Image (cartoon, rainbow, N blue to C red; front, top):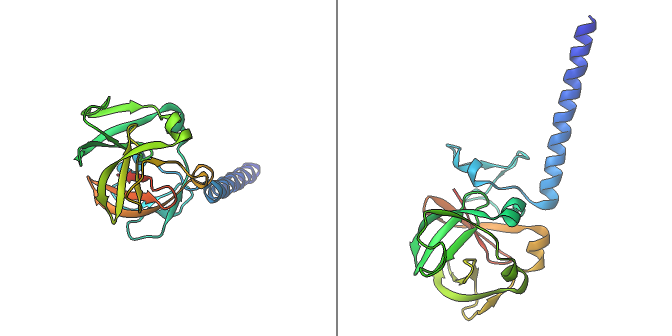
Length: 197
């Protein structure tokens, strides 16, 4: 009888810890945004993506999704894989956070199948000096020499800075296209696109 009571007590503690962990995860997603990871997405056979908090998100036909910044990519660099060549640029997507990269043919790392690249902190702080890439999804696409690209309604931009709302609250993503075996989203505040495989 004593061992049964001990087992029941252990199960209750285990269930309580599981519930507490789920509540903390949901609170984290509520305040920071949902976590994304292409390595987890690509391992699934289903198109449905589900955050570790239990919420289904990033559906092509679904509502806007708020995602947090991936700190490991920001601090230690993105792991890019090539997606193709378009509008005079080699196009890459981060295998972890979905961050895109558009490189001109004479850029370092251009034409490589995959590589790791550190974030350009200088551009992030002072703004991106951008050039026109083309028109897509009813918007104008720009890219910086560092590879960071943006969608904007204006057609004459030469510099784009990151708004503080994205720094503090993460990105508010809406689906815009299915391309290169990835779903493409963009942030309504900064115009920054993301690819989820």
